[in-house]
Length: 463
Image (cartoon, rainbow, N blue to C red; front, side):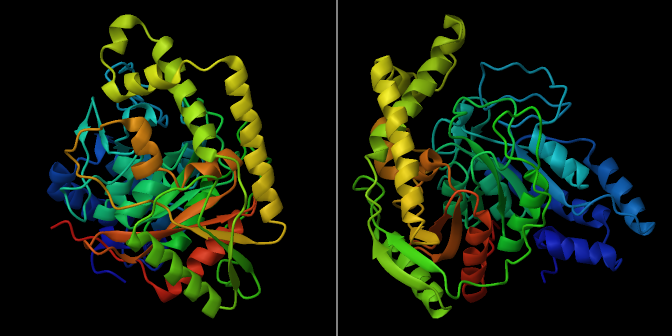
């Protein structure tokens, strides 16, 4: 257990609260001191919550009375600035958005607040969540705590940076094509994109047909703990799943003995991956095989997912641009305009053809999971780019540098998790991706936990 309260896992924080070794006020003070010292160099926050100290004091009083209000009482969390938090504006990293505070919490924030979590603030995002490099026109550049010269990834850039820097243990990200898993991979975090509909979302995002929210944490058990409060029914989301009030840590220590795992080297097209990514997959395969799983190489025979996702991505950004007043369009990240211009010209038939191929992707993966419990593959094709590097040719970058290994699982709507796995040759975190059939989020937690037991997750030292 760390001597710095800010670096404790959520589980260890809660155990310390219960034993009166620490209070939520102690933890918040340690976290805020760390933020004051490190965040000027990292830029993880869009805004801070001035009421966090009052929330921590109220939580401390409940713990003194032996009456915590829920399973996260007093644990600090952050919320990505694509997600509504009552009393704060949702700026989406954009100069085009309204600075008026919103009235209601998003569904997952309702769940986390009901569990007693203390909201530290809202973390940065790429503009409307459109890309992977972690900058936006409103808040500037967010940097990777492992090495500030590099991006943390995106679009959940601030969540990734905050998690790696020790700004509390629990962070909300969102993921329409890899936006939880990519920054988790480049920042050394556990990042889950759950089954579509498992965590309700409202208001809908620009990429509503594929977008999910998910936990970003420094341990697998913390991810499952956070997920338990996020994954609850909310009537505002017409696509969310029925309520399943479970503790997703149940069964997480069961291991993988007897499970079948498909190591996949192709998700519908020839995506690049460097030597570090290949080594991580091979190492994870050995760990899971040694733990009793049956592991073999498999080709799931998917349609060209790069074609499917590029059409969806392009149509979503084109719609975003063309519903804005002309004077606001001039304020957008130029990359959004580039993608909208390049990919907007498809016919309705071409778009519906992409939708049919998306369904075919889901069908092919469902067939694969009749034979295999889990899929193992890279999370990212390479390490992060420089934080100050301009975004050049974003359509090509999406397929070669950003998300070629992640967006297939958004199309198929199945759970996929990025798991840290040691370090790359340049000293930055390495990772592997684990996916399961729709609704089997429990299996990705089990496999990730089996890997974590053999390869503990490192902690960044931004100092």
